[in-house]
Image (cartoon, rainbow, N blue to C red; front, side):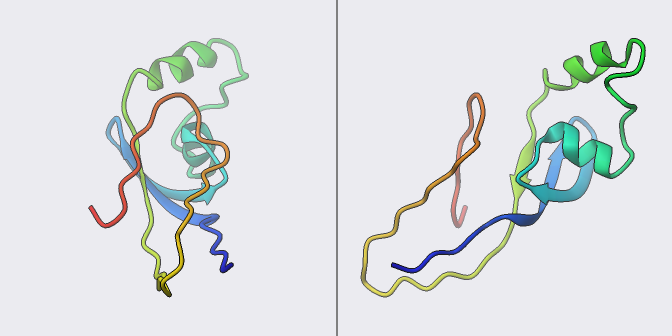
Length: 89
């Protein structure tokens, strides 16, 4: 069985933000990595950080994978809450 890890650099869009970041990761890790949010553990920043998650975010990445006749299993470890997954639109 062939394996293809999709960890690495992804793009995140939502709530007026657009940036690259590393998966495994989260909305918070992308924004912190790009210095687009304040430290959520400092003073009242936690309240603003929580409000961010009232928005929808899209994570995207392009990759090449050739199917050779065998079944394909997409295994997504670490997806949290609700999400939709699209491959090739």
